[in-house]
Image (tube, rainbow, N blue to C red; front, side):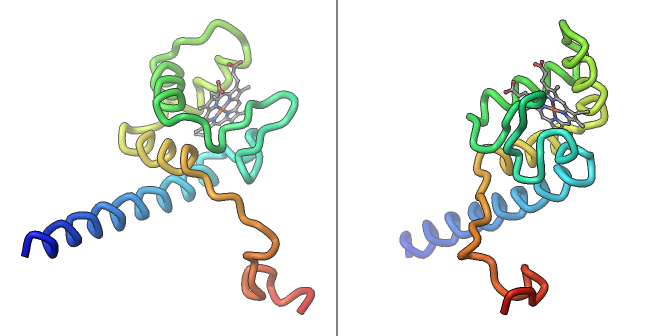
Length: 118
Ligand code: HEC
C-alpha cells in the first residue's frame, strides 16, 4: 500500500513537471525569447545561452530583470521582456530551460521532419 502511494505521488510529480516543461517551451516561443536566445536556447555572440543553466541562476536573473534591475542597455532590453512574466510563467520557463532537452537528428521522426528525407 505504501509503495502504491509512493508511486502515485511520484507519477503526479512527473506529470506536473512535464506539463510545466511543455508550458515553458510554449512561452519561450510565444514571448519571443527564441528570437534572441535561439530556437534551442543555444545563444549566440550577442545573446547568452540559456539551455541547461542552473534553475536557481535562471530564476534569479528573470526575477531581477522583471523587477527592472538593469545596469546596461542589453539588460534593459531583456527587462522589457521579463516585465510581462507572471510567477508561474517564470517557473515554467525555468523548468523548461534548466532541463532543456536538445532535439537530436536521430530522435526526429518523419512527422517532425515533415516527411522530408524519408
Ligand atoms: C531582444 C532580445 C531578447 C529577448 C527577446 C529576450 N532576451 Fe533574454 N537576454 C537578452 C540579452 C541581451 C541578455 C544579456 C543581458 C546582460 O547583458 O546581462 C539576456 C539575458 C537573459 C537571461 C540571463 C542569462 C545569463 O546567463 O545571464 C535570461 C535567463 C534570459 N535572458 C531569459 C529570457 C527569456 C525567458 C526571454 C523571453 C521571455 C528572453 N530572455 C527574451 C536578450 C533578449
